[in-house]
Image (cartoon, rainbow, N blue to C red; front, side):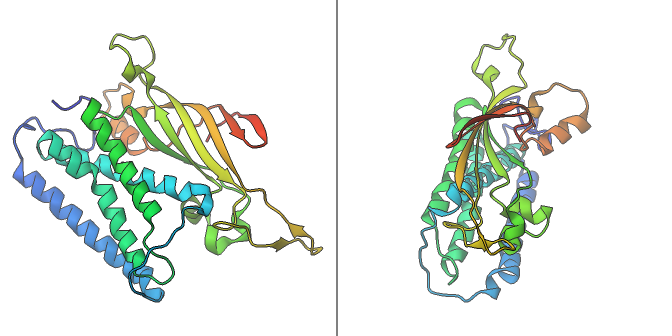
Length: 292
């Protein structure tokens, strides 16, 4: 049996015990088209502008205080969630839907790693490959164990002060900042306590506990290049990790009869809801009114 806590966008078919070949054909053709199209676009917009090389590996595990690795985990996780929902919607047998759909994120991102492996500027990153796999296994493992996602990955962003120092690397506008500036990103493990309790628990089903990870002071991958003020005095940025403890809301668990609200909640469910948070870093502990 599939869990009742399923996607509104792709609800499980009433005939989910039987394969719906039309739906499956639509899903597979769409996924194949997006897969091929995105790789062609990446090659045209990105890789063709850099020299090629023979396949090689590249160790970037020490860069960006591993914020990029957490991003790989999160991306794989959400691609896997969509993949599982689509195969369930197509009536694919439960375990096959979970494994094939759940590993989709790892497959897609690992293909990009192969492209990196043939680029002289980069290389195949075993760290990225491991992060991709971890994200897929997180979604697969929970579906196999519980038929739902009790521990979700979430994302939040607030503009940092560091992007103006290296706009080509960290982004020239807010849209680029969100993707490139790791100083402004925070990734969260959002845990739903009620899903581990008895069904008649009085604990709010929508209330989560969130554990966050971020980093600050980074204007380069491993080291910061030198910057100077108008008086030629060198400016130093302290690179450090940040850990958070906060509350969160699982919007998908809020009961509503509105299809619009259900769809909206599903669509923005990956965003961490702003809430008071404690921040732990090497300088001590401080409180934030909005842990975002």
